[in-house]
Amino acid sequence: MRHSKHKYKLGVNPSHRKSLLRNLATELIDHGKIKTTQTKAKALRPFVEKLVTAAKEDTVQNRRIVLAKLDNKAATTKLFTEVAPKFKERNGGYTRIIKLADGRVGDASKMGYISFVE
Image 1 (cartoon, one colour):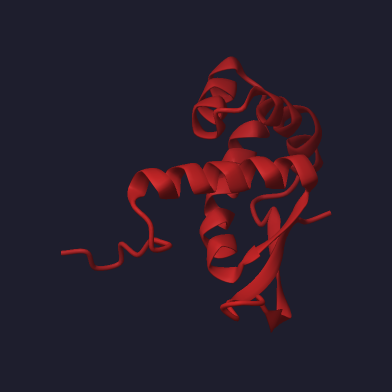
Image 2 (tube, rainbow, N blue to C red):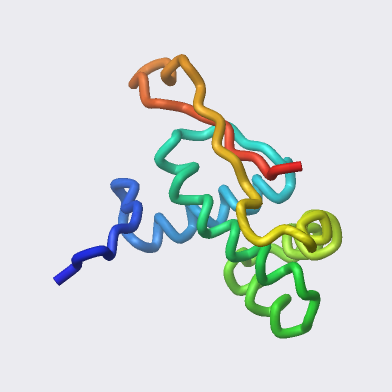
């Protein structure tokens, strides 16, 4: 039984979902704020927050864990040097989702911004 095992499937197969979250996380780390659908933002939030929590303590093992999840050396380095030190004293809640009023042109899906908290 799958009771209480909810995850965002996003209408794609598991390998596509993995690469989608990886790419969204890389862009969020690089730019600090990205515009995407609300469902993708809600799926991305726990993925990124676990990476930031691991990056708060700069060890070789944590770098390897984050690099395995992101598969991008530049984003991993930026996460450990610029993003995670801002959240040393914060226990979770590193991201925020801001909902936009207008839907996407074409399919009217609900859009929003996901960004790091200052």
